[in-house]
Image 1 (spheres, rainbow, N blue to C red):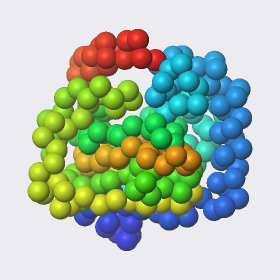
Image 2: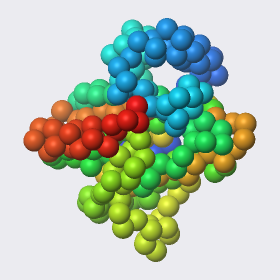
Image 3: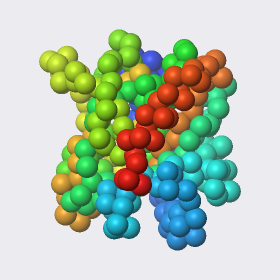
Image 4: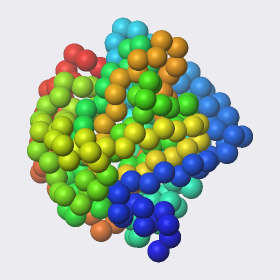
Length: 246
């Protein structure tokens, strides 16, 4: 077992500094700029979220980028896919490539949650990767993980009112939660990966000038089966919550 796997299995998350080098980060920025100009205006409304839907500068999330652009599809199928296979110790299926942002001054907090609640998998063998495109610290909303929380099962979730993160942990904030929480600072090209049951959250972006942009990658193990009935019920609930907001 590699050191990365040991950290992932023990803590429920792992950091990979320099997952992309400086040149690769620059190319990713170029491709992202192109995607925003050429592709985003053509996307369905439920794939693009804004903090304020009347202000394009408040773009906060873009879904399923790999389905709309060959460069991002090839990128998704490359190094992130290989790392997911390693960390989950199984063949994997890539399910989503996302853009995340917390615009300066208006980027809202991400509520504490477990991605597995959204995924509806049995067993919940999946992971999410988060790759920084900006310098990220506590001021502009770094990711915060609760170490070891993936070993303690699924927590109760309820509606949050936060677009893009519709469900959050209702009883978060115990002494154990706060004692085990770890803020993860990152530089452009650094990657974080976490298990589907790992509790995580992020504060809002209180910087007046700095964005907090990142790409996210979701992979399911081939051993995980989707509960389609639960998934459909969740999607109906989500559509109701999003009405008038996207």
